[in-house]
Amino acid sequence: MAKPAKRRDRRDGPAAAQNRKQPDASAEQGVPGDSASDRKLLLIFVVFFVLSPAVAVLVYRLKYAPVAEAPGSSARGGAGGGGGGLVKTDVTYQEVLAENSRVSENASRRNFGNPVLAYITPWNSKGYEIAKRFNSKFTHLSPVWYELKSQGSSLTLDGRHNADVEWISDLRKKGDAQVLPRVVLEALPTELLRKKKQRAKAIQLIVTECKEMGYDGIVLESWSRWAAYGILDDPELRSMALQFIQVLGRALHSVSLERSGGKNLQLVYVIGPPRSKELEMHDFGPADLQSLDGAVDGYSLMTYDFSGPNNPGPNAPLKWIHFVMRLLLGTGGDKGLGHKIFVGLNFYGNDFDLSGGGGAVTGADYLSLLEKHKPLLRWEKNSEEHFFVYTDQNNAKHAVFYPSLMSIFLRLEEARHWGAGISIWEIGQGLDYFYDLL
Image 1 (tube, rainbow, N blue to C red):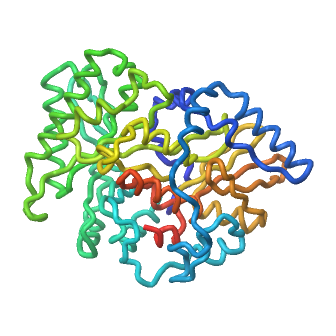
Image 2 (image 1 turned 120 degrees about the vertical axis):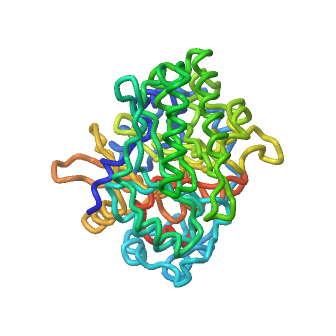
Image 3 (image 1 turned 180 degrees about the vertical axis):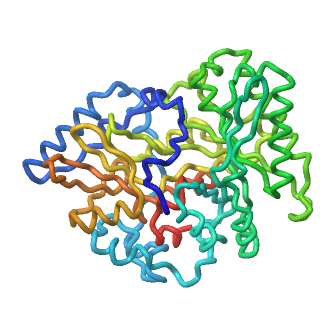
């Protein structure tokens, strides 16, 4: 049974406080109003957005607008087995309800040629089904299974009980997607980084698990945890952190897999988006990309969760994504290391109570809201996302931001611009016809 999106692992973890430092979409996220209540909503959005602190960063982002242009209604990727015309800004709730479960008969055809990494969570069983159904759409699958934890003076790798060997076997019968479970480093960072035996033990646990379980590598998450502990503000510890990733990458690369024709185990590393125009010490930046180039096979960039209950708005404004990619990769014509980036793409949405609060919604939640409220879907041109507003039984105004075919299409185009792949958090939360675009 799939559990609510509110249970999703917000991968900022303890570092969520960093969200206060991220560039604000304030003035560019105005919401149009056509009634007294909507004008009230607009006022609330202005209070939340325009009067926020990061105006300088906003101006910088507005200057460097994304290059992708919005396609017309005849754009490739329409739902319903070739029934195009749904990749558009003026989509209606009736069309979403009627078409969201209809997909192309040729589910194996790839429309997005760059790498696609998809996360699957144990609390959302639909993700496991989607991974098998659209197997050929994905190049990397990352089930959220493992945590490396401190246990007294030692370490333990928890999570094998989550591993579904039969599911992996079924995947490999259907396609070539590589399985790289996510491992979160929960171990005390100062102990792990300063003690040679702990570092060696951590690497040994991870490599051994990959060998014994037949994985293709791992997706490692540690940077946000290290930032939360202040590790990355200490130059010595920051250097040790990068060295740990390098040594882990080399250890994984030293293991060849007979099953995959001698390919080596891979390391994909999770990174958060820089939070301001000027990189701070705890940010993962261009120099870090260069320093880890030989050790890391790809970077899962978390370009989502831009807004939250305290600053309601779009999930991942396209100009913000472009700003982040430009900051990481610069303006070089060859896009540098763009081919190693998996641009984060959210398949969940948010339902914000504009008087305060709110939370994440899955595709099923979204469809229920459409059925109940029959709203006008609006295209917010500055963020390039769809949203709608409704009033609940307590007369509280809500704004719901959830991906659409159009918003996904434009983000795929942005990834193409940089020669990058995408990483989806997470496939159990999306609508079926999203996969026609991949």
